Length: 251
Length: 125
Length: 134
Image (tube, rainbow over all chains, first blue to last red; front, side, top):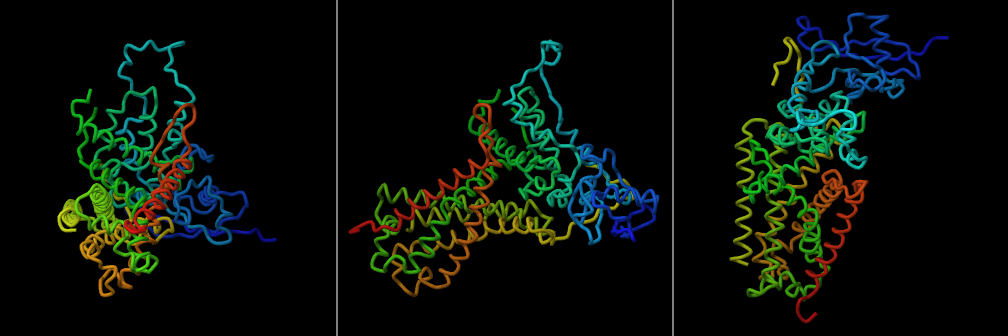
C-alpha cells in the first residue's frame, strides 16, 4: 500500500544568490493530524536541510511560525494540511515584510514600533508606591474586562500581514502595536496614556487605518485590533475637540 | 493632556458625523425624493403639498428654518464624509504620491459643496 | 523606520490587491458608497430651487426623468449598504461598561438599526404627507 502524500509549494529566497523569490515544490507524507509546520519540519529533516523557517513552541503560544498558507496569514502550527488536501499547500513568508531568507521575514520594524508605544504599565508614582505583599495595585474583574482581550496578543504579526494599509504605508504603526497600546491605556492601574498618545495619535499612528478589518479576522488569538484602533480614534477625537473648545480644561 | 502632530481628529470627526447622517437620513431622502415622488407613489396633484417642498417654498417660518438646517446638516457632513473616504480610496487604488495635494483637493471640494448648499438653501430656495 | 536587512526582499502590493479576497472587495464597495451618497446629495441640492418651483409636476425636469429615478435606485442600494456597515460597526467603535459587564456590541448595533427604522418612518411620514388640505 502506498502512503498518501501532499505537495508543498514553498517560497525560497536565498539572499545574495536569488534576485527574486522562487517556488520549490516538495512532496511529503500526508497525515490527517499534521499541520503545515509538521510538513516543513519533515522537509528540513528528510529532504532539504537548507530550507529556513522560524518556529518555537508548536502549540499556538509563541507566535513565531506565522506564514502565508494558501495566501492567508496563519500560524503554521495551527494550519492543518487537511484544509488543503488533496490540493497542494502554498507556503510563503508573511506578506508585507522584507524577506530575510526563505520563509523568514525581518521583524525589526514591528519590534521597534512595539517598543515605541510602551506596552507595559507606567506609574508616575512608582518610587513612592509601597509595593509588596498587601500593597498590590488592585483591580476588579470588571476592570480587567476592559482590556483583557487586547492582552491576548502574542506578537505573531499575522495582522500586519493582512493589513493592506501597512503594505502601502510601512510607517503605519499597525494593528498589534495599537492593540497593545490600547490594552495598557484601558488598564485601570496604568498612568501612561499621555505618554503613548502622542505616538498612537500621530499621523502615522491610528489615522492611516481605514478600517479594512482584516487584522481582526486573521488574529489567531481572537484579539480585535480593528476595534482597538477605531476606539482610539474616537477617544483621540474627543480629546482633540475638548482641547480645542476648552483649552483651559487641560491639567 | 498630550499633544499630537496632526489635525486628523477634526477631519475624522466630520467623517464620522457624515457616516451617521448618511446612514440615518440619506436612505429615506433618496426613497422619497428620488423614487417615491418621481415613481408616482405620491399622486401628481399633491406634489406641491409635499411637506418638505411646501416648507422650503414658504417664507421664513420655524418649519422652513428647521427643514433647511436639517438638510444643510445632512448634506454638508455627507460631503466631508465623502472627502475623507475618497482621499483614502485614491490611495487604496494606487495613488500614493501627492497625498497632501489630494487632501487639499478633497476637503476643498467638500467645503465648496457645503457653501453651495448653504447658499442654495438659505439664499436661493 | 528601519532599513530592511540587506539584501532582503520586500514584495510590493499590486494596485489590484482589493480583488484578492472577498472581504477586501466588500471594503472597497463600502468606501465607494460615499461617492454615491455625495453625488446624490449634490445633484439634489442643485435641483432644489426647481423642486420648490414645481419641478416634480414638470415631465421635462431632471427630477421627473427616468435617469434620476435610476440613479436614485443605484444610490439607494449603496447608501443602504453604507448604513448596514456603519451600524454594524457601532459595537466595534463604542465600548461601554456600566457595572460588571460591558454592553454587548450586538445590542449597540441593534439600537442603531431601531433608531434608523424610527427615523426613516417619521421622516417619510412628515415629508410625504401633504402639508395643506391633507
